[in-house]
Length: 139
Image (cartoon, rainbow, N blue to C red; front, side, top):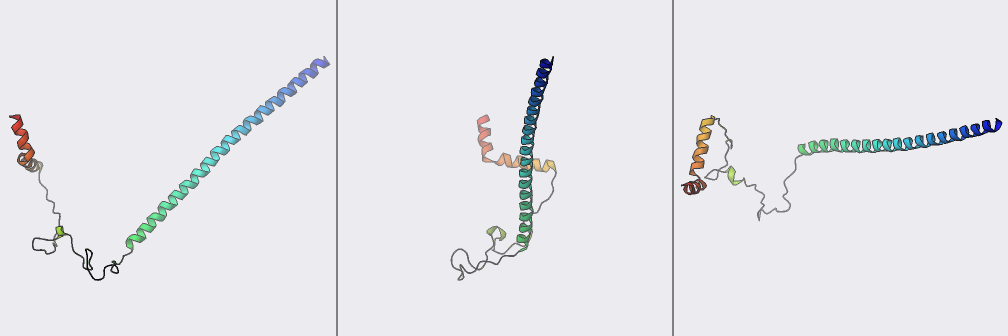
């Protein structure tokens, strides 16, 4: 009996050591995965803070930049020769037939009903050159 007890005690001891080893190995594996997850969380949190801080800084800088007025560059072409002169010339679409600056609104919208709009579009379509070619092919 003592030999059997010593064998069973030895077996249970080895089994306990094996279970302890496997448990420790599992705990280390879980801790490694948790550490990896924790590292990812910390890294991406830091990147998110950097991105948000850059966004806020850029918005503030753009708002300050919009309020600042820039002087016209005169030093390059002081004599007024060449394409860029010291006198600013308005765009040709802002001038009327006599060359005077238009001071009225450039876009005046008026409301029309659907039938009038459809008649105008039909008239434009009927008068288009492509419509005459298609109608002659159909005949």
